[in-house]
Amino acid sequence: MNMKDKFPGYYPPNEKEEKLLWDEAIFVFDTCSLLNLYSYSDSTRDELLGVLNKIKDRLWMPYQVASELHKNRVLRIAQERKNYADTIKSIDAFRKDIDKRHRSKRQHPFISNESFERLVNALDAVQKEMEDCRDKHDRKLHDDSLFENICSLFGSNVGNGFDEKRHSATCEEGKKRYKAKRPPGYMDGDAAGRDAKPEPDRYGDLVLWYETIDHAKSKSKPVVFVTDDSKEDWWRISPIESRKTLGPRAELIEEFIAVAEQKCWLYSSESFVSRATDFIKVVSTKAQSEVKNIARSDTPGLLTGIFLPSFKLEDMIADSFSKSQREREDVFAKAIASVANPSISPEAIKFLAPTFKFEELAKEAFHKALAKQEVIDALKDCASAVDDDLDLDERDQLDEDDPEGADENALNED
Image (cartoon, rainbow, N blue to C red; front, top):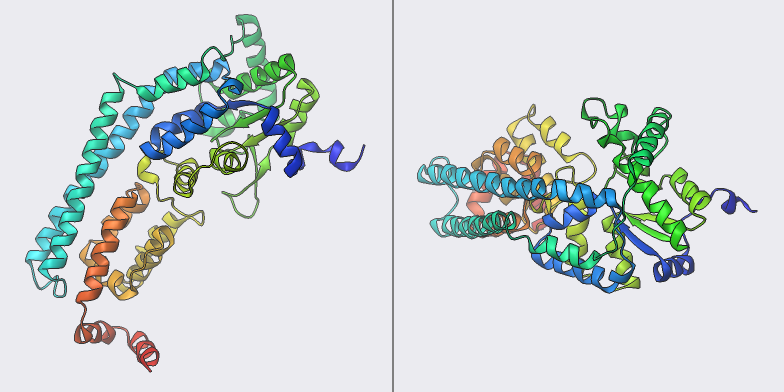
C-alpha cells in the first residue's frame, strides 16, 4: 500500500474517481442541508430540486434525518418568517428616519428631491416583496409544498432507524467518542459548552453516520454525503483561516472505508451544487452564489443572501464605533464594497453614511444580516443618483474635510 492508500481521508478523489463516485453513489443529505432549502429564493430552490430529481432513484435519507426534519421544519419556517418581519420593521424605521432627515435641509444639503423619491420608491418595492415573502412563509405552516416535494423525491428511500437496544448502545458509545473528540457529533456534546444539546439529541450526528455506514455496506454502494454543518467534528478547519475548510475529517472517511468497505466523500451544499453542474445538471451561477452565501452563514435565511465575508466583517464594523466619524465612514464604504461589490463612488458612500445613521444601519445590515440583494440594489441606485447630483462645488466642499483626497482628485484630473 502506498501513502495515499494508508491515509485516504486526506486525499480527495481525482477527477476520474469523483466522476465514478457520482455515477454510482447513494446520495445522503443531512438535516441542515435539507432545511436550508427553506431559506433559498424560489428560483434557486427550483434549480436544486431539479438536480435532486435527476438522482431521485439514488437518494436515501437516514431515519435520524427524517425525524429531525419533521421536528425542525416548522421551526425553520417560523425563523424565516421572523427574519422577514424583522427586516420589514427595520426598513420601515429606516424610511421614517431618512424622511425626517430629508425634511431638515441642514442635515441633508446635497440630495435632490428626485433622488430621495427614488430611494423611497426602492424601499417601498423591497418592503412589498418582503411582506409577500413573509405571507408566503405563513402559508407554508399549513400548506408546505416544499416538504411535499422532499417527501416525493425520497419516497420510500428512508431508513428504518435503530431499535431501542442499538440506539442506546450508540449513545453509550457516543459518550466515549465525544470525550475523545472523535467525529462526528462531539461539538453537539460537552465540547460545545453552553450550546451543548441535551441527551440523547446530542448523539444525532453519530446515529445518522452509523445509519449511513450500515446502508452503504448493505447495498455495496459508495456514498456522497452532503452536510451544511460546518463545525470541526465534520471538517478539517484551517488553523490560519477559521472559516476555511480543508476537507472532511480524515477519521470519517477512514472509518467509512474500514466498516462499510465502500468509498465516501463529504460535500457542503456549496460544493455539491458546483460539482452537480459538472456531473448531473447545470446549476446557474446565481443559484450557486446564493447556496454558498446561505450555507456559510451563521444565521441561516434568505436575508443572509449577501454573505458577510470570512474575514470577520462584523468585528471590523464593531471596532469602527470607537473611531472618528470619517474613519467610520471609511469602514462603511469598505464594508459595502466587500459585501456587494457596488459600482458606487467613495464620495457618494461617505456622503450617505452619516445621513443613514451609520451605526444603526451597520448593526442592522451586518449584525442582523439585513443585506438582502434587493436592499443592496436599492442603496446602489440611491448612491448612484446621489453621485450624479454631486456637482463640482459640492465635491469641493467634501474635499475640504479631506485635503489628501482633494489632492488625489486633482492628480486624477490632470
